[in-house]
Amino acid sequence: MSFVRKPRPYSSGLPSLPAPLSGPPSAPSPKAPRPRTRPVRSAGPRSSWATAVTALAVLGTVVVLLVGGTGLVNQLWRDAQFRTAAAGVSDVMH
Image 1: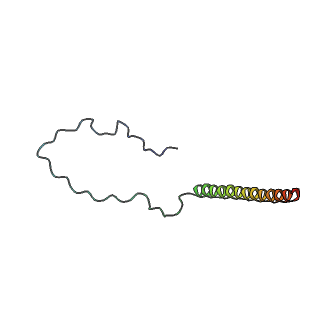
Image 2 (image 1 turned 90 degrees about the vertical axis):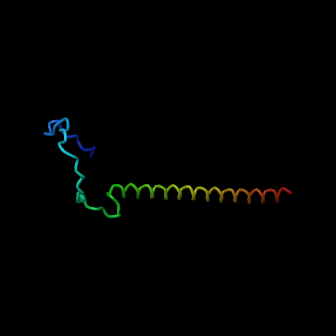
């Protein structure tokens, strides 16, 4: 969905060419500041789906780190067991 403003139609009632000015140009009058049309948003999350997507991304990262960490610990534990067994076998052989 696009939120871009649509251009005004050509039949807006304005002349296509500017009318010639009669007399010296006057200084531009100071404009009053325009009132805000939209309220200021709070610093919190903009929508609930963005919060949900962020939470799922964090949860997925935690799961990947947890699975990878336990896999690494299991690999190191198994390696230590094999080294101990190999050391025991070599002691018996000599």
